[in-house]
Amino acid sequence: MATPNLPVGTIVDAPVVELPAFATRHPNLASESLGTTIVSCTDQFFASATRMLQDSEPVFVVGKFDEHGKWMDGWETRRRRNGGNDHAVIKLGLPGTIKGLDINTSHFTGNFPPAASVHVAHCEGEPNEQTQWVELVPARSLQGNAHHFVEITDDRVWTHVRLSIFPDGGVARLRVYGQPACNWEKQDPKALYEVSALAQGGRVVAYSDAHYGTPTVILKAGRGANMGDGWETRRRREPGNDWIIIELGHAVTVEKIEIDTAHFKGNYPDRVSVMGAKVDESTDQSLVTQAMFWPAVLGEHKTDMDKQHFFEGADILFKGPVSHVRVNMFPDGGISRVRIWGRLAK
Image (tube, rainbow, N blue to C red; front, side):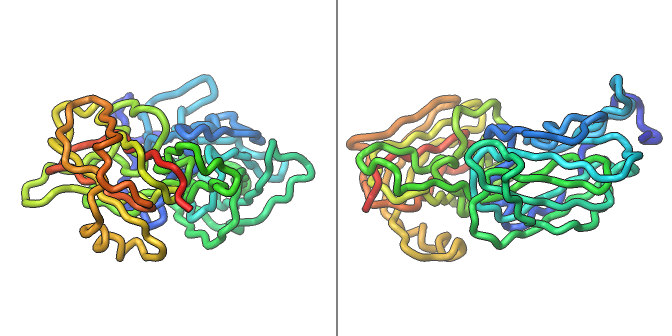
């Protein structure tokens, strides 16, 4: 796969595409940063299947080769000469309801699979011969160097995905967008929970701007790895402030809030505040308007660069019950993580 007129070592980025709604409202359950793993794979001679799970966008490096041939940023199998097809079984980082997929063949032009299908399963351990696989996406045609978005309408919870390619070839990235599942009926109602966390069912509903970074990552575990591992808005040149609305995994009485500006030094917010309310039924669109009138859970507080800010006790003005929060930053900037802790509301 040669790229003419470009010197060796040139890095070619994948083209920017407009994401469908499900890809902006739900996290990628197949992200390596969530602990997603490859359980099994029929073949990965040219490129490891784990590369499909990377959070970074795929690139093409002109003239880069390894011991197996041209280096490709994705999963690539050898050319089949004996019939059949290749597949990879993936354990999702978080079990959940799948809202949509993206089978991305960026930079695979003469070596992409002509077709692919997706099956799913729910199992406590690793899949075996008794595992019942359900067809989620029937075999569909693929194009080279392209995204293939598929919206899913299925409310069942899945733990594993099997991507089959026909007959062989390469896939740059597989994204499995969905809503993480959490069984609150088995949880201790007296315990303190980080209900904003992705693993607890937290979800980004809407935001004012996301010019830099991906808003969903503010709900991930751990501190941000770098400035790109957070939510950052463009520089605001008009009145107002930026905001993000988060649906909590369960309604709670709020006891503690963390706003982490890790790695944001010349671009952290001047101030932050949090508003919240218990919402029984609403659409994402209507929540944007409603949130402007929610009571203050946390008043305006100054922030510092690259720091974890904790608020509790008297700082919490309205404890709830709260099922949704709106985090405001004044006037703009970047936040690495937001954490809301509380005790489950009945």
